[in-house]
Length: 537
Image (tube, rainbow, N blue to C red; front, side, top):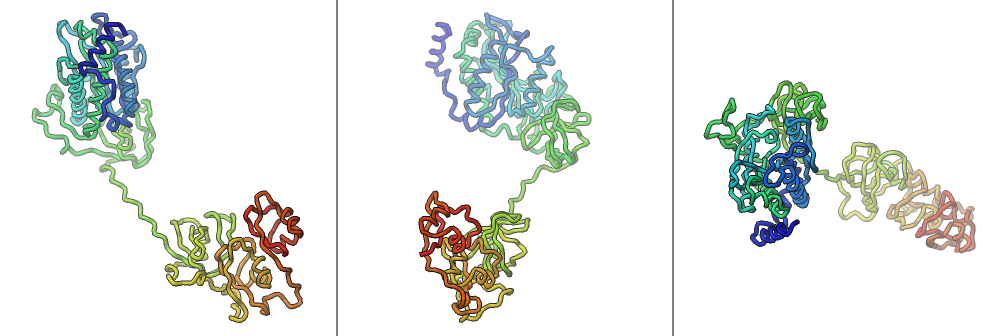
């Protein structure tokens, strides 16, 4: 920056024209918005040249400052150009390329930045343009609500520019500039000032003043989105319809009353950038996608996708008439229910397949079903232990909750397939944490086989802490025969981290086979730290 430029920047700050901080209200309003920023001209097209300033350089400088400002407020900025380059082999192609970039980005707003020139060297001030309903060289037409949204955006920006720059307010005006015929996207063109005015040209060439303009454009965009203009059905001024075949009356009624036209796809349908099967494809719309119709052109509908707010074209033969999308009803909340098993039931670790088994429970346990199921198993919480597992749905039936005053594990009943021993021939015990079936058999002078039979169990591998078992009383037919040798007295030990079964056996002066037998283990390969084992006293 030159000495003169530094002095001008300081003067602008002192006068309150230049704010180096983004407006406080911009953050929430601009966050997530897609803004297409178009620096006018470029490449072999310099635009206006006056007082040593090239329009293409001015517009790019302001656009890059605006990009930084908007991205700082959470917006996503799509630049039509980011260097001194053109976008097409001729003027029409160049202008259409700028519109296409905004369309393909599904932009929420389009801002084209320019500098002005006139024969009167005293003429100064900014002007903001919005599009008309017709009259574009590109051949498009805009609906009243589309013109209305661009008109609202132009008014917001022009007000911010006049306030920030303190230059003459040249107003918001309607013109059919090619880049303003942007279907579905609110679009404006900002003439930042007059290069033909020497004093204003000097300011426009200064980065500090370019920041003033970028700030003003950011203010206008934030105000537009914050006040709901982007989603409202806004009226357009009557002069925007001047010269159109179906011109709106001078006192135009609010488009809010106009019926909306909706269609739905009934086949997968490409959303295209133009009414041509060879146009760029934005996305594939699935069957029954809702689309708001903006216009009908040849064999294509120009539509707005409400899920993305992005415009495009879809073949008319792939859609049918529809009303607007209806809000989906809330999914019903699942209410847990109670079931009971009417036969011995296996508890599993997963929802399907024979994976890890947590053991078998005898009939008439209460289980609370915790989630809806369409597979072969329920996810349940076991009433007596509070543990969660899966069980086969075919083994249970509907039930109420367990009685509130039910003693612990009282719901367990002997399996109908096993003869129920009389009161004098059996007793009930509750499994303690860490106990195995072989440890219980040892404690009550019976056998693992007897416990399996009387409780309807299939395997001794897993029993659950808190589970109730029936054990034969001493002297019953299921007890250890008198001729059988009585087991040696035993004590309990806890496996320490890093210990193996062989280490435990050596420590307690016994053998691995004895530990396997006493604890009902299937293999001597591995024990877990914290596991409780019985060892000979």
